[in-house]
Structure formats: structure tokens, C-alpha cells
Length: 333
Image (cartoon, rainbow, N blue to C red; front, side):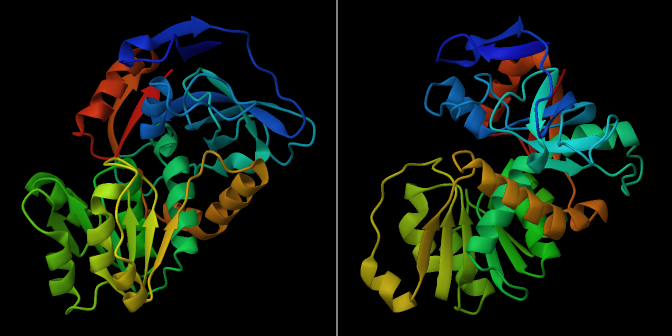
């Protein structure tokens, strides 16, 4: 099969096409012929040598794919050859085929409600969903988001952010989000965000206070990290929860513990890739039960910035690093 591997830690030029032995399905796994593979910031970190694959995972990048099942291993029923699936991986998605444990599979509907979207297009676009769905759902569950509460999503134009905005709305939350520039802000509003804050021109703490009559956000979903730590706490409501899922602008910051105590607030951090297999399977099962109905109904849709051939993975990484991507970049074998 064809893969894109990392020749050595470094820049995008270190991504090289290669041929390796075709995979086979073992107990409790299936082989998926990949229609598309999602590109995530974690892939860029892995390429640079900062985020190695978990033990036992393929060494080439790729945390999510969509495609069709072409081989079913023992104990992998009821999945069948020909099933259309999206899959959460530990690695190995930049490939023509991927081996997937059955607990990481999600069914892709035969029909997509969006006008003009055919079955094949829907299957490709589904590759944009598994990583964001698992990350956002598990984090919002940990942060105890409930209908009627206010959710602030930082980076609403990113792969995780576009999903979080839509899912927050689908779950009955009032969603506020940040984005860079009026065009991206307008697109976030089209996804359902009630209030969109242009972080290049506005102070999100002030806008959140104005939008909530001074109360603040019940949950803040943050991909920025240290640079926003103190201000995120200022934006929280009493009893609010700050959930940190990214470190785009630093991993060390100062926190006013007095303000934390006064707000009776919670700061929590979570990651997905390093979780043990049984936890990931449980998260995917929850996603299938609680999130996937919104996907099937079209209330939550994949947001795809562009698609590129698998051999242009380096270009995909350059696009991701540019900060201009809205939603997801997908690679097509």
C-alpha cells in the first residue's frame, strides 16, 4: 500500500511517499480502503518530532480517515465488507489503507441532507469528523456543558472549533466564539454562533461580559493555552469551567488563584491521542450515541477547507501552518 511517512523530524519537506506491505485484518479489526484522511495540528507536531505516535501505532501520521471496509477480521462483526465508515486512529491515516479496531469505527450515512452533496462527496467529507467529534464531545462532557448554558469556543474557524460551534448549538448551548478577521467571523456566524469575536480587533473578555450581562461563560473551550489563561478565567461565570485542549500559544502561564477561588471555577485539561484503547473506544461509542444523530440529521456538518492528493501532504502541512485554513484539510489517496 502507499503511505506518506516522515523521513526524519523537520519541516514539511520531510514527508515522503513510500510503498509498504499491504495490511491485513487481525482479531477485532477491519481494513479500511481510505477515501480521505484528515490533517490535524497533531500531525505537524509529530512531523517536527514533538508528538511521537503511541506504542504499537504506525509511525506515519494521520489520526482520522473515512472510507470503505475491505476486510473484516475475526470478531469484528457486525461490520461487513463494503460498509462506509469514518475512523479514529492512533496514527497511520496518511495511507491508501488503514487497520482500525472495531471500537473506533463510525458509520457514514448513505445519504447527506445537504443539497448537492452526493454519497461519494459525503464519504470523503466524513474524514473531517472523527478526531474533532471525539475531542469536543469528551471535553464538553468533562466540562459538564448543559442546555441553556453559555459556551465560549476559541478558534471557531479551526477543525475543532468549527465542529465545537455546531455541536454546542445542537446541544442547546448559547455559543460565542473567537475568529481572526471579519470574513472568518462571518463564516463562524453561519455555523450557528450567536456572538463572534474578532480577536484581532476586540477583547474577548469585554465582549463576553457584554453578551452575558456581566455573568460570563459557563464553559470556555480553549486551544490557545498559556497566552489566554488569565483572561479565560476573567471570562468565566461563577462556577464556570475552563477546558484547555491546545497549546498554540504556550504551555506555561500564571493563574490568579484568588480569582479562581472567588469564581469557584474549575480548570481542566484533556488530550485524546495518549488515552488507552478502552477509553478511546468508550468515547467513540458515546460519540455514536450522542453526537452522530446530529451528523446524520445535518445539524452538525463537516467543514472542509480543501482536498489535496495524498502525495501533496507537504502542501497540506504548509496550509495548516499558514493559519488561513477554515475547517479541515483532507488528503485523498
